[in-house]
Image 1 (tube, helix red, strand yellow):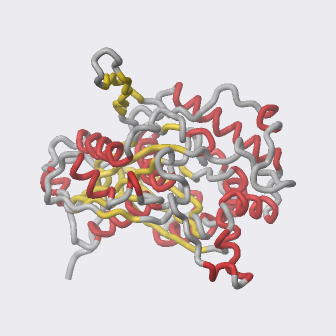
Image 2 (cartoon, helix red, strand yellow):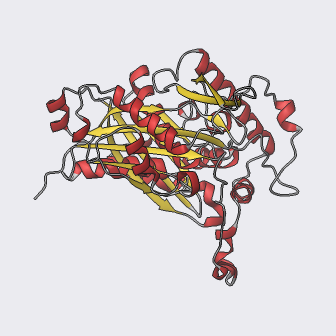
Image 3 (tube, one colour):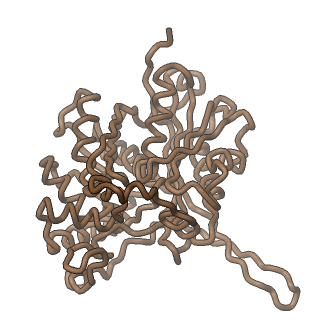
Length: 398
């Protein structure tokens, strides 16, 4: 019988987040970006023998085209890890990266692994949000109770705004605060420890030689936060999902490109390789809700994760609540009576971006480093998930 053991995070890093489809990472392949994230994570644990890594679990919401063909294994090989390291790509839409962390932790907890990689990657510049050839089952449209499955994300946000009475003014104010907090976080160096620099290639045709010239530049700062954002400007934006709605591009998350990676280890591996744990993975929960109110999902997942952890809501001092839409973030906050001062203290997806399947791993890196930087005990990553789900994971500083 295997012994239940703790799973510790010993490395956590992420790329800067690029705007899609015309941002700095638009021409960077997601498998290459993932490889860079894995290499960056390994640099944080130089004493670790890479051959001790059992597997890499990588979240990706649209695992096709440039991020298809099992992008997890592709990233492992491109990163130069030993052939013995496996790779599996998992998809739970926006919770893919967080699910990867939970799955990696579980392998360690049950004693089937001592060192695991958990990561996430998404290029929304290269792969459309619904994929290249989306195909929805016709059965969805034959029963009224299934129609919500076909709702676009924006329409679900409108549904949440209506049911939870979230005003346009409150949504815009929330969006402005996201930008302001992100800009302050950048100015204060809050993201420095978690972010690695991406080498971005610029290719131009040399007319004289007939060859392609390549120059490189460093990309090290999230590019979504805007200093020129104002309530007046946000208020002038038209709604995009419902004619008389309240959800706009300004109070919704940005389409983005990015990757994040964590290395998890057992206590045995920590002692063997002389590693320093940053945090412990405590609990994870996923719960379903009606698809048409997808955004409220964290309202069900958060209490479940707290119950598994044996914690109270007030024990969580830092909450990364993914801002898919201001409407759903506010609805979750108010419904659970969460402390707004503990939610996204350095901004969220409205300002920083939301590279779908990568977000859970990216925000896990944010929490792990924030707990250490501010000497806090417990942090949480939580998000709503397409087709009606919510996910939440809890971390503890050690």
